[in-house]
Amino acid sequence: MKEIAKLKQLPPVYTGKWATANEEEVQEELSKGTPYTYRFRVPKEGSVKINDLIRGEVTWNLDTLGDFVVMRSNGQPVYNFCVTVDDATMAISHVIRAEEHLPNTLRQALIYEALGFSMPYFAHVSLILAPDRSKLSKRHGATSVGQFRDMGYLPQGMVNYLALLGWGDGTENEFFSLQQLVEKFTIERVNKSGAIFDSTKLRWMNGQHLRSLPQEDLNKLLGYRWQSAGILKHSEGPFVQEAVQVLKDGIDLISDSDNALSNLLSYPLNETLSRDRNGSLTKFGGRCSTRFICVFNSFPKAQVAAALLNAYDNGELLAALGEGSSGWKQWVKSFGKSLKRKGKSLFMPLRVLLTGKHHGPDMGASMLLIYKASTSDVVVPQSGFVLLDRRFEMLREVNWNSFSEDQPILDSAVSASR
Image (cartoon, rainbow, N blue to C red; front, side):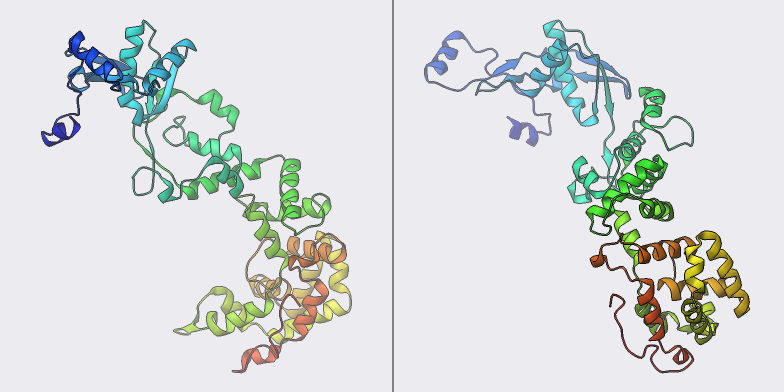
């Protein structure tokens, strides 16, 4: 019947062959053991109408439906019959579901009416779409809730983002707590059009919720993560608290915290200098490819390296770090004055020499953490952390005078993790 209707470009309506069969024909098939189903007898004329809370009035003509099955030949009732009886007996008042269920609503409405049940309010929300506006699927990276949790997303971040897929409170605000969503949500503000699932926006929103956690909760969350990842020996303490403060602005997912802390503790000096010399230092039209390289390339590297090594050897730098933030600031000011440098021409080269990287969190806070990690037993030895002593050993191994020549920067390629 479906194939014939398809050829005629008609809806696949059951013709009702057995709806009008006489008793003799029925008994003959039953005696043969022919499987049979129970169908709902649909009126041949008229229409069914519902007032959808999102889509407004929705009407179906009954002549496009045909008698539909409510009990399969194996004795199992079908979904539309089960869900109608189930919702009615539980006194469900509102049925909110995807627009894909609209065709089911026609059948369910007929069953509600035939059994004398009160009809619930229906609200059919639009589908969540992929960036190409097709239905979101595994092909587009759709994952389960459990997988999002394993990826480092917070429950409140997920709920906030999903609530905004097709709904808004009428303001520009996008950040809501669960309680605020409960207070502000109304079905009338749900959109009819499908919403695009934006993983970048979800990540950003999760970061907002992560950083809005009470400080104690955030410390526990990230501290446990760092211990579980084999970076720290303990999940709590002053080091964890300070590390969270320094790194939290760069963390959107809980899992981001692993790389954030590992990156802060690492010291890829040789790789950074080699990369700059072999690639980033290339000039175009007489100009450096980046502002940092211009500053770093024009700085007397032998002078700053020698001055920094001297400050370490005479104990000035370690003493300053031991005094905390105020000691660091005072030392940097004095160090810059001795070199007659300030601002970027001082801090950019100093960051590379001390951290081995061009960019990162606040340098003073980073150095205080590195100092504390070097003077305490908080970091797991296999974590890739390079101690302060080893950093200055590596600085001594660099041929800084070769920066102005065409010979290699390093006397030897020494591993940062040695």
